[in-house]
Length: 173
Image (tube, rainbow, N blue to C red; front, top):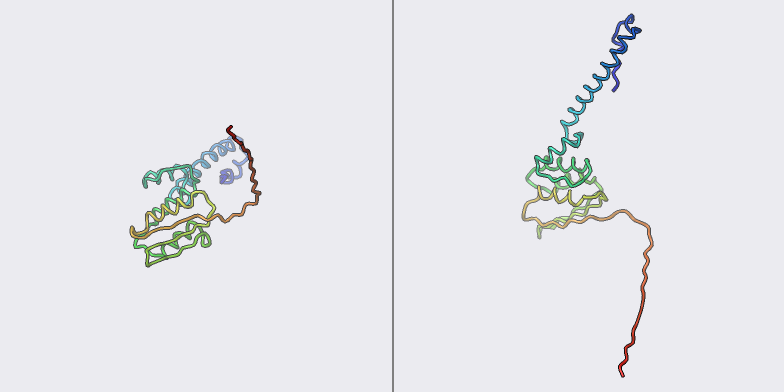
């Protein structure tokens, strides 16, 4: 946000060249101070933190950076903070909705066999890894997991196949 200090001067000083130059240099310093304050404020929250701050959170939680996007890394850290027990299916669905949206997953539960089947319909790279990180943190040990990622994009193309045939006849006399 540009700071205009000239409007703070009395009218008779606004046309003095030396004061105008002083105000320009002060405006640059104030702009830098505002950017620093904005950066500190943004880094107080995981959703707006910069990459250096996210790296500190990852070190705190023992999360290895593997080239993911900043948004994915923020989601993973928020997931670690939002891990709460006891486990319920409603809690799991809420977390999945936060990660993939309300239409981005399907959950079915087989209570008799302690089995949860989850299908992720997100086309985001690493969606299943994010899911397993979540499940590792919140699921009780006796529950089995069947998780898969379903591709929802139809890609038009042509399948081509080719073959060659050769034969050799061996005769002995």
